[in-house]
Length: 448
Figure 1 (cartoon, rainbow, N blue to C red):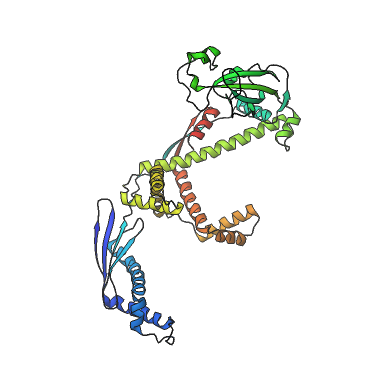
Figure 2 (cartoon, one colour):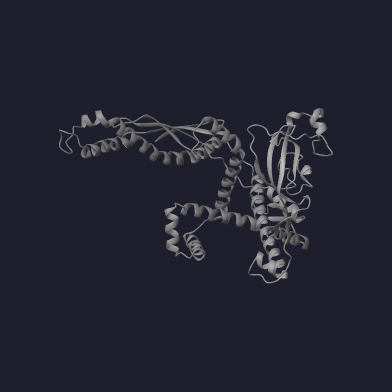
């Protein structure tokens, strides 16, 4: 075997491989003879089709298919000989092949980056944490009270906490209905300016069966950033002191004004929340336990994300453009994006995320190799038993379902990755930053 290679500045390897005819010629002859024995051609007995006819009609396809097969076979040895580690799709271009010719072909592929671990033990990770106060628990109880609240119709003027059932009709400045604008039913809670900017202030005080014309800024127009004392648009403003093109006149009839009635905090309320609880004290403890569990879940996610981010930051290595592009091409094939503009948009949007994931995978595998971390057959059987206990299926039934969904390899990969994460967590130095629960939850949402 003769090989020659070239590595471009962008990390693309081009290699030419030559295999002597003494090695491959008989392979081509054998595949032609095998086809001759099996092909059925009218006018010829089975196995008696002339070889010159076989070569003329099918020879090119048969030989090229065999050449590609042999090219891949010898490529394995060529990569070992040249000590090359492909990092993406390998392209094979046949140059010369046949019964009396050497097998000559060219391959190209992105080179896998070299990863050197400099720091993966004792990774320093900062996470947020929160203590749960009685006020936090009481706030959750109030949320449950609102959840189980009932509505009561009132004849009094609507307050800021009211819920309004309305008939709404768009009208002109004189109060006449606009042609083509039908009356619509709306159920709103004050506080959201649901009918347009300034609507809430003009609806406070409305009573059941009362009609009002309100003037609001069109909800589809931008809200001015200039400071203002009130969102109400007065008739004077409508007459010419503001841009009337942004204004909408609405005739509003209050069909019903309702207020919430919250349940008392007693044993009956406790049963509404959870029928297994029997006292207000048990409710407090149950809520606090659930909130603590949620906090621990978020903290766990922070630690795992922080470890991966820190690992990537502390162990830099160069990823060539060709290797990155090959990875992105693989993602595009998985999600089946056909249009060029959609492919370009996807790459621009996901490139940073894909690079992070790629760096993590390569560092992860290097750590597994260094620390001899693997998933054994026994580990996999134990996981099947664990799933069996959760689902009620037998381990064999669990395995069959996984095979049916083609999910066994995915499960093993997840186990493998989790094992590496657990190793890094055990070695990491985690620092906690305490904050109020509301801030903790806001940070958790923004991090998603």
